[in-house]
Length: 340
Image 1 (cartoon, rainbow, N blue to C red):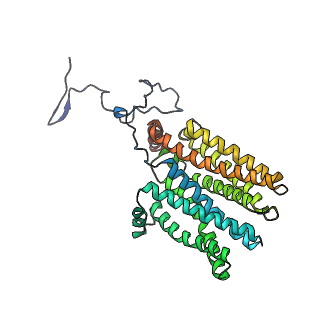
Image 2 (cartoon, rainbow, N blue to C red; image 1 turned 120 degrees about the horizontal axis):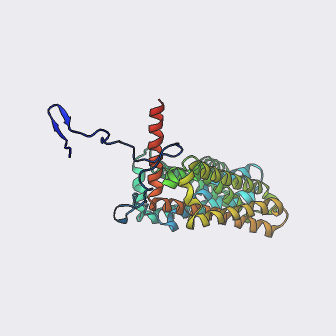
Image 3 (tube, helix red, strand yellow; image 1 turned 45 degrees about the horizontal axis):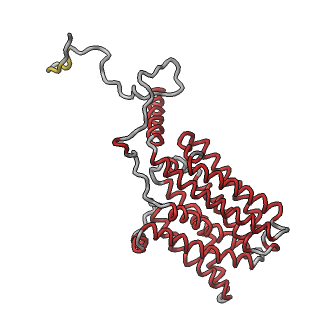
């Protein structure tokens, strides 16, 4: 029986090949001739607790905040376009809906925060590296602009000031539409963080479809031509970005296809496609078809936002969506170092 120890001259009596091999336990895919010495790990966590603490956000607040903020921002862009092209009824309806949506979005955010003072505290400093800080300042600037645009259009007072407010809301609208995607992707939640490249485009497409749907519901037939085009554009953009996310992210995108999130995402895709198709084919000729198409687009966008929210929650609760990407990155880094 051999023994080993440590002396002044180093190790003595050690057995060759018994040194600790850092990284040897990671099973790498795609290598030929390697055989795992242990079975695949069961992804459990210490005392059944998740590796990540899932966000304490509530779907009724935060997913609604995502949806209503997107509807408001995209609606301001369409309202400005309608005003520039001589569609006053459509512009007025979209300005009013954007104001209502941003008020609802802010109320949902404050309700999730618990106290209105917490939102005001975010405005004490401006931190460009924080999506939450920049988003708070963005809402603080956008709210008065969209409120002024709606109020001045409804009253007919100060048309030049109303035009400036409309333009300001339209300029800030795209950022209002997409910053919530940046906010979600900035967290450690796997399904959101890994999809940081595509998620803003998913939100932009979804919001555009929703705002177009609102325009179809609230505008007369003679003025809804741009809304029908926007509905098709938004639906195609959302579908393409969502597919790209699922393909690029791979394994971590499973929650977007499975469980409650998967059902919501599929329902959103079907409703959006039906709404866009109905708007393109019948929305310019029949008022009832325009209203039904617009309602389907609004519902599809809402289902998509709630699906994205629940996909993030599902990925945060399951340890494998955190562990597997970390191991794959570690293996890729080791391969790169060996190749170099």
